[in-house]
View 1 (spheres, rainbow, N blue to C red):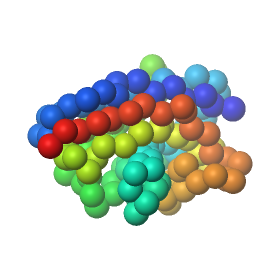
View 2: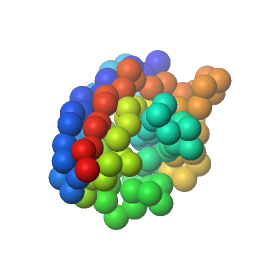
View 3: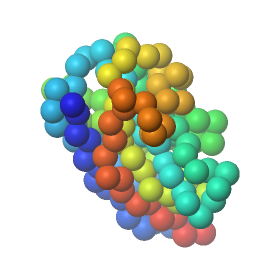
Length: 134
C-alpha cells in the first residue's frame, strides 16, 4: 500500500500563496491516480471536496472552486505530489489530504473518488491544515 504524508500547511492571509507537498512512500504504481481533497467540518456543504487530481497520463482535473488558482503536479522520481495554491481565500480554509487510488482512473473520476470512506483502493495521509484569514 501507499502511505502519503502531507506537509506545507499553515496560516496565511487572503490573497497569499501556499504550496503543499506530499511524500508517497510505499509501492505507488505509475498507473495510480493521485490528488488532494479537503475537509472542512465547520462547513457541512464542504464536508469533502475533491480539489485536484492527476491521472497516470498526467492529465489534471480541478474543482470549479479552485480552477485557475491551484496547480497540481507530480514528480515520479521523487515520489512527491505538489499542490500550488495561489490567491487563497477564506473559504479555502480546511484540512488538506493527499490521496492515491490504485485504479487507473481519469483525473475527473479520480478527483471525485479520492477520500471517500469505504473505497478499498483509496489511501490518504493524516492531512495538513490550511487557514486563510480574510
